[in-house]
Image (cartoon, rainbow, N blue to C red; front, side, top):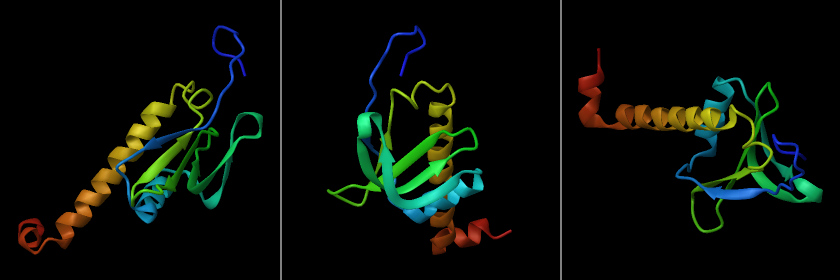
Length: 123
């Protein structure tokens, strides 16, 4: 792999903690945004490195996002090849959009589930 200056680089899979906890909600958001979603598998990185994922999303442009459950709690961890995927100009904006839509979906469900807010939202 080469960077934008033509210098050879190595990449590896990074694991980043997130505040996300609901795989089904995340899958729903991703499908609604046109991603192809896979459940359970292995994400392959540089030199045969691989990590298990619980959910992987692939855009029509071939950009991958993968998540797995944290061993230490209910949170999901983002698995990313930051050297390869991070170089894509659309990676960060796509990820930010996914996270915002996940948060919006969660907030709407909380409003619908709240007895005090049901009367306010009933139109």
